[in-house]
Image (cartoon, rainbow, N blue to C red; front, side):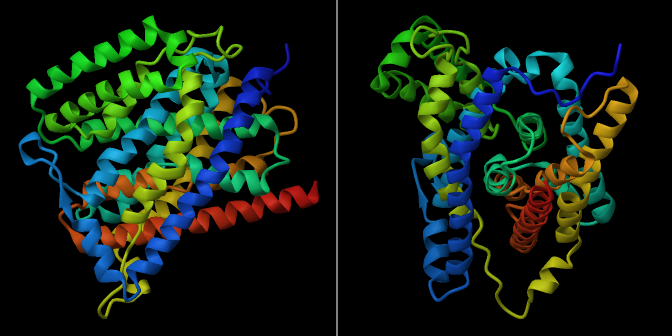
Length: 410
């Protein structure tokens, strides 16, 4: 029996779903980049004081632990919508996607772990014993919206299996990032709010499973019934000390995948919600977060070169630009070697290298992890954010150039 292809084409339904996600994420990726660019311009313009004042304005209700700055509302509140979509996508992949089959999931899952471990090790090696050592998780993330936007522009001729590989890798990458945020960045857990959060979460799961077809047919029903339960769950999780974006993931996991099939072909309620709420995430939540997070001011006597020579910045840049492709390519090569598989029809190592470089676009989750790590250290946070922006831009340009050259030769 001959060697099996590590990058099989996959079922037609799965390929079509990936293509649909690629089309949706493209606009969101450009909005994300645009919001970050505007934030950088504003933060280094005469409007910088106004920008900082708006971002740091505190609003909310203190007794409920909801007195946050607008910047924190964007990170803790709006990003919960993004992570709700991540939860939906993760569950769909595990129940009805590539991750349900060990054969098809093996290579991208192990590649994702390699793409997390190597950047973290590189960062830690550069910052070991220094004040920035705790930021090891910053260069481990891949921003799927930004990466897919680049892929949609220059990677249209790539084999469908490689696109599927990138999507699956990014989904697993998100899962690892969720675990890191929940475990590493939770200093104290209050059990009472966490237990109380189980009540609205259980009701949310019950309603979505029991009345899946009804929610799929009536757009208003989710806003009227599920949104209040989601907000209450989010509030209790936030009060417990666990980062509130985890509430979005839990709510996404509560939505059934294989129910409501009579509403829209084979698409269950999770697919319905993903289709319905992705524009809210990609078109509003993530760009607003990027606007309030990416506005880094280079003030005083510090130059960009000075900021990027900080070991924190060097660790992030090296982690994203070197660690990601080394980790992904190395783990993929080792997995294929040990499993005696081959790359698959139409897939070459140079193509995989381009996709691996593309995975070095950290951005959204990297910015969030940077804020969680250096929230009380403004200089370290500024250097970390600058490094994320520089490294993500460089990864996008380099990967885009490689894939465009590949298309030209084809």
